[in-house]
Length: 155
Image (cartoon, rainbow, N blue to C red):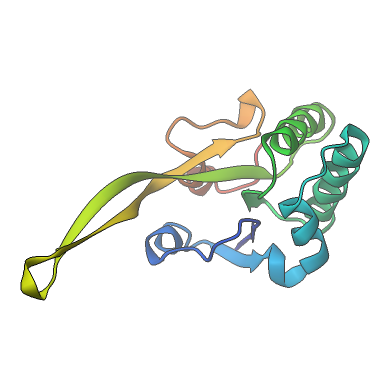
């Protein structure tokens, strides 16, 4: 069973979890609350951001997570992690895949007694998409399904 690190703010929905039956799931906020908090409050200073991205990258590698959902943080942090993933793929046979959930925003109108209507927005989970991986490991069928079909770490 592959190890999956959830590094986002919210609990996964039942729909999201149902697509991840082959993974041992760990939440970063439970395993390392300090790192989780620092990712959520990404620094603006470039040197601090590089240090944070490096700390997170090695946290993932040292604990041998094969897949990471997220992480929280700024687009600049994700860009730096993408660069690290690209550089790492040149030096090693395997590195973690990063996945992101995508959804459809659906408006729901719920009638109430007396004729009023409550409007709300629900995000309907549509699947996962690979990100921050090298071109060699990208699978157009989707990251989760692609990993399941490969049966092993990316090469």
